[in-house]
Length: 163
Ligand code: CUA
Image (cartoon, rainbow, N blue to C red; front, side, top):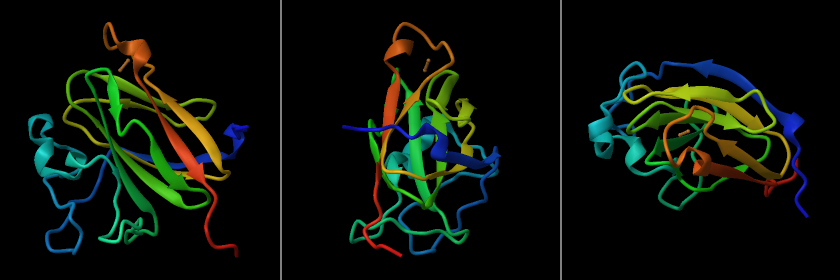
């Protein structure tokens, strides 16, 4: 049985900006995201081409310079990509979300994580999922006929190492 521990989620930062990703950092996610702007027609040239957590070659999540994990999510066509995202509990994750077509919403149900997603803009917010379980995400901006079907979820996993 899954227990959803909504109260454990803290959004520590909501920011419309994201620093220029430098080339040659060793990550495979360089791309033209400048000050929170991105060309929605050219997401293939950005980290949004591979929605999900940024991982290393071994498939392990990689901490960025600010000590958080990065995850890229795309809203569009009445879906979120990825359709589910595994994240570790207790580790801050910076979510970068953009839209391909129209304005969408991004709300983690039962929490104060709630941001508007616009084509051409990247919303970046850092969230720490405190407890293992599932957290569902809905679109809360009416975006068309498939609006009600727009959901994704975070599968929050217990850390492998115990402190
Ligand atoms: Cu997307 Cu409502």
